Image (cartoon, rainbow, N blue to C red; front, side):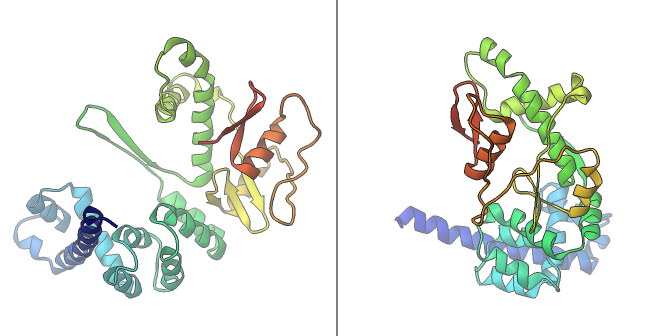
Length: 293
């Protein structure tokens, strides 16, 4: 590791330590009641005012600090730099004194970018479906804010099945507009830009009549959306009456098999097999495969 890289790592871990101290102090300050003497309605407002930060950030500091006070093993791992503050923050959303050891073991072995999905998968195996469904329903939200460049950023939290329906509708609207994009724009927009346009079309231009397919994978060890997001068995059962069911057989190595006979153009079933097996999608127009984004 070079000199600049070494400095970056050292200072980065120092920042982790500083952030851990900040959230612990924020929680202690909120519980102390000192902020009342200064005439503030909440501790979060006091912190936001004196540190010139957004109120949601101050409230998040308090939440994380209070959660870490109930998770001593996670706090110790953070102090010993076994996990980063990003991972500790993620753990505080789901960890309890009863499951902390299991979730912390996951956090110590997977990258931060995958931690949320891995925790969700673990909870899906060991928590009651009713508890998971109720928590996800309670956590649903949609918020937005104006950015400095004048655009508006949206943040949504939805139960997996509802999110899958929205994503499928957006992707269907995105695919429907691809030909017009190809003809009218010299610079091909990014996938994110196309999906933004697709979301607007799905919501404002009769998206209620748009037909989109949501693929659910139901296996012996659980059910997931197409991207691997776990869903509960009860959530699947609630929609199975109105769903079209396909059977895709896996071999002993968990690879999909039996994609039906060869044809000039791949069938919908064959496309699903290839995507499931190789994580690529079929380019029907050219008769080949292209990598899935």
